[in-house]
Image 1 (cartoon, rainbow, N blue to C red):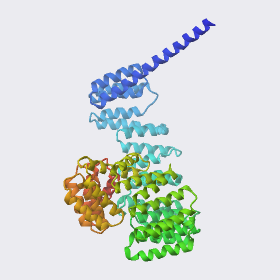
Image 2 (tube, rainbow, N blue to C red):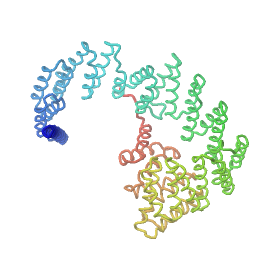
Image 3 (cartoon, helix red, strand yellow):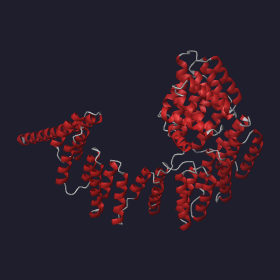
Length: 607
């Protein structure tokens, strides 16, 4: 028994030793591979060559090491040696036409395009015998940006074998070549064969389709779709036209397509309602109203009628002045009389309470309404929504401690919901309003990693504001004034807030708070219809604080102001461009690039 046990232990030790030995070899090889690539990337081609040759000697079948050796020779202009290696590989391989492209490329590096083209043609002719080789041949052509050859390879293979489908590869190549119409045709063939491909194709379309309906790409795509719709009225083409019109912000044209889809299918009205939301977000209130009125007229359920009317009321508040408030209040009362004051109208009642508190200065009525609603609520989610609205109104009344209690209750009611994170942010904001900056910052620092990007960004901005303006000024005098002005803005006392921000700018010039006050005041100038004053504030930030954290905000807001309120697209383009080149890590980078390209007239078809 002892002898058998010793034999077992000895055997296990041998296995472990062997495994350790193998792992050490593989680890050393992996390190050498990384080392070779680093040498190559840093331009130390002789060292790269030596390392790759050692690796290839140890593992002759590794194609990556082989091409590492070839490419190192090419960088050292040892073209004959590179050709010798490639020919040896070609002779020893079972008909690998991609090596012909590699040989052609080797000649192209020597400026011998005639000889290179001969090898490329020979590689392409290999498709005649074996169409299945097309993918690897075309990919190798693409590696060296030989797009014409790659496209020809795929096209020939599909002609020779109808079962092969390289439409997606061809579409991408056509796009890179600027052959926009061919690209769209190929994508449309793919979508027609499999409609589920449309969302994937959309990502590619987004590179070419812009908000400019007159651009070549938009015109071509629209013409193709309308032509196909006339020949074959498939709902698929209506869906794609709707998508195109949405990109162009032609919401009523998209609405016409969505109506056709609704009438001819069993789809719900939800997509039409979503279209209204997009129109509203784009500030096209007329289109949004027309779309929602259709939803209300067609709605098969009272709930959808209620949602539609609620949407119209909220939009009316956003788009009209205080003179219409009495009319809006009357409409809320009519809807509540029609649909009741039970939990089925909870969202409507919360909206009404907010309207009474923030627009009509009827906070007591609003609180009474919400407390009565709270008595009916059974679900934690409903209770949380009501308490959140109550707390907001208490902040409006500057009853901060009571508001903090409600916000904390919300966090306990819906611990794992985004509403809980929103309530935590409001705890921090309320503490900031009342001057308890230390506690506010502690809450904000927790929220920096929030799952909601919006909350995380807002938390980071407010945390930095508190931190930056607490270091130099231990009394936090300027920060207290700023928090007060911020509260006035929350209370929709915009003119008072503008005045207090102006006082901060006069008394605390040169302090950390200055750029923050300029930005906040500029936004209030915009809200109160003073675009020129807003422009001046943004320009001051750009001129005096261009290396600070708010510089990208100022550039983006100024670009938006020029594009919309001031009607100067050239100036807008200038400031979008500044974000692209100078603020690559900005949260506005993607939007700025998209809008800049649209204004510049990109997405044009090249010859």
